[in-house]
Image 1 (cartoon, one colour):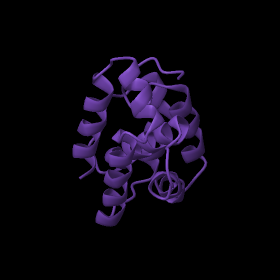
Image 2 (cartoon, rainbow, N blue to C red):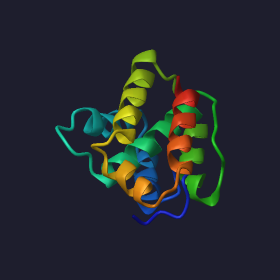
Image 3 (spheres, one colour):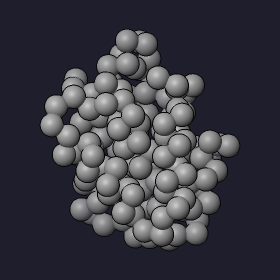
Image 4 (cartoon, helix red, strand yellow):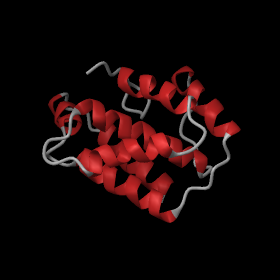
Length: 133
């Protein structure tokens, strides 16, 4: 899985996604990422799920509800600080819907964390949802 922590940027895929957002001037990358989950027909790939969790973390930070700052969040932290974008209630709801699907049984990411018997990840995702809404 390439994960070293349960937080949103505690894996390779999320960190790589952070560079995608850094090349954007708006929330279009975030919307595309979340729609990849909500428009998925069937099993949600772990990479798509990891990117969606990362996108949700960026939204929470845009709302002023920052998660932990680490060396792994530095790219998105700088982007958020230089892009004071308001998060609409519709975008927050899209993010919440995406997180519901990432936590669902048809999610490879949820399956991998369950196999690892690590409940911190699900708690982290639920806490993230609260910071978005």
